[in-house]
Image (cartoon, rainbow over all chains, first blue to last red; front, side, top):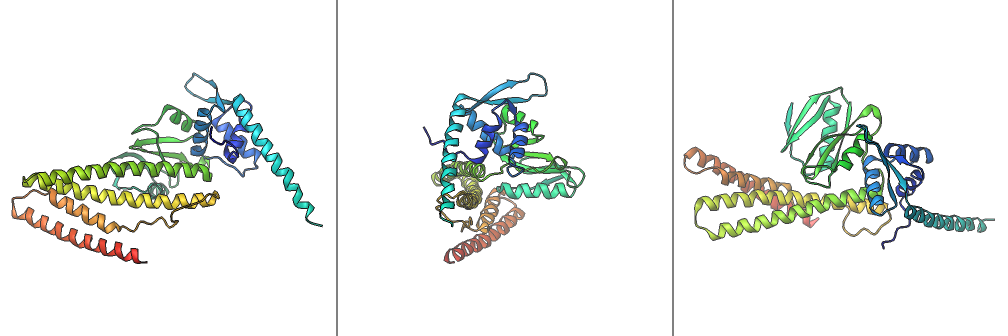
Length: 106
Length: 240
């Protein structure tokens, strides 16, 4: 299996945004809010990421409305949660070690 | 309004479409180099060009997704698809991070590489054909194709070099090793391509009347001049 972490910033925030069922436009908005407008996902970037993560089984389609205004909703899978947890551990380690920088300054 | 343009460079094509939209002409259709435009409010739309997964089509997934994003699919053509969004709805950039940018340009590079390989196979077959016959008309036709295909190959090779340059820059930003040069310029001059095109057209002109012969002569003459300039310019750049 290919190395899956570190996650790119886009993958990290998309996974976070589908912890509850969410659709494409909702994901963009949520990521924008979570990062105070720092990360704005372009449609090409989001589409590619969704395709990749669906193929890897990290997310799945939650609902597909059958009327003319189709809005696919996505949700994170168990595999997705595992990948995210692994990434969280890695980030915690980084942050923990980052604290050491302070030790050198007095 | 219809305009004829041939672009291998999708970034130049995007810039052209956005420049037209800024002047009040919204691109609404494309067929074999012919872009059709309709009047719009200046700057009403933002255009983008994406590479597709299919040939002359986009998947229903892609279509639905773009629809939800408020992005209109104007038309798929070959491996490309032209998209637009109302400028009033905010900015429209397809790829917003380095990673997806690398993925996008890698796909483009792969497509040009495949196309170049196919063109080279055609070239070899045409050369074999020209060598195996004594029929003048067949030889002329083969020479025409060889010149035109050669011209296309040069354009594609230059495009691959440009994309390589973009990829090297993106990889550097992502902190990855970037073999290859960042300048993204091919040494092969576009003049050589122009000369080959004229040469090819020359061979397509039928023999017979003196008028045709004169036109043919002029085309071949110009072709030699351009190819000569192209070779000089190519070698010149190589020495830098």
